[in-house]
Image (cartoon, rainbow, N blue to C red):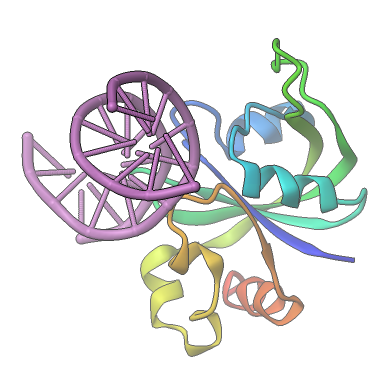
Length: 136
DNA sequence: GCCAACGTTGGC
DNA sequence: GCCAACGTTGGC
């Protein structure tokens, strides 16, 4: 099992949108590195959902409900892929980017190192650490 | 609103 | 194939 974090602009499509639909397509990713990670996703993998822009915090827990398949929004058939995500639960305490930067255990996260990457893996310990500080 | 990082495009 | 110009993302 692998652990993931996906970023989204809440004004465009946020955690609430995914929660409202329960399960939805995660499409429109147009970055090769992100695409390659999406191809590694397997049904059941946990996924943290991060809001970029104004809020800058991890807000929810989802899981992969369908592994990679051709992105229907890829009109030119260029090989982009989508996955399906299912909302699991909102984090009771969202984990802010500022908090992540303060935690020694989270310094190696791709979120801090590659600010523009929209789909990234997490280690199991990073994932568990985030969930731990998201409860209280 | 600004700017750094970084990906893409296009001229050569 | 290189690299300058340009566009986009996203934090501050």
